[in-house]
Length: 174
Ligand SMILES: NC(=O)c1ccc[n+]([C@@H]2O[C@H](COP(=O)([O-])OP(=O)(O)OC[C@H]3O[C@@H](n4cnc5c(N)ncnc54)[C@H](OP(=O)(O)O)[C@@H]3O)[C@@H](O)[C@H]2O)c1
Image (cartoon, rainbow, N blue to C red; front, top):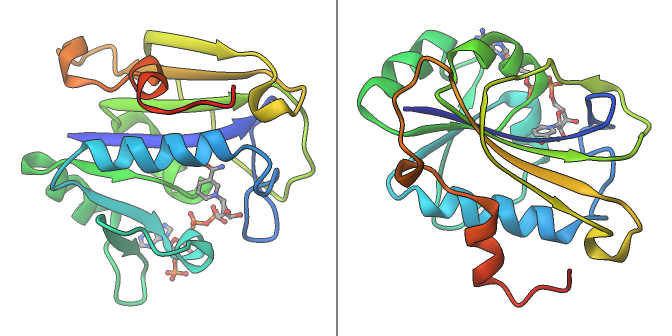
């Protein structure tokens, strides 16, 4: 199974200077990322070499780099996803090549505009659940958390993780 997880601004803003365009302004989204990626036991996280450079350590999770310089290829990722859960976490170059291959997409859309130097392609799918949180982290900004599947996929809701399940687990300052 191939899963994608991403966060973007209203105009697909995705990265700035090797970091997120909004920096650390939305800690709840970072907690969601940590919780979500930890739900898939034995999954392998993959990302492009530029994203890998800016990532903090991800305890308890396995991360592999996609790179022409001794890393995975896109074909390696596809092959690995046949009998493993592979979670694509970025960046924009990698999503561009894998967007239409994803079985499941967990997408956060921050309802604001940001300065950015990297923009992600549109990734669509069948929306299984959608949760709009008003004024996330007291920023005055609404954020929409969506769980989507590929229209051709026969995944059931039980195979997926929803933002509302995460909300139940945290003592939220939302
Ligand atoms: N908002 C979010 O959810 C989110 C998530 C992740 C990242 N980001 C942001 O996105 C930005 C980075 O994204 P990006 O698009 O510039 O870079 P990226 O996708 O992270 O990495 C690009 C690199 O991946 C490797 N690559 C790409 N296609 C490949 C292929 N077919 N085969 C082998 N290797 C391949 C190449 O590495 P080599 O040059 O080593 O060959 C390429 O330079 C950062 O600002 C980061 O913070 C945002």
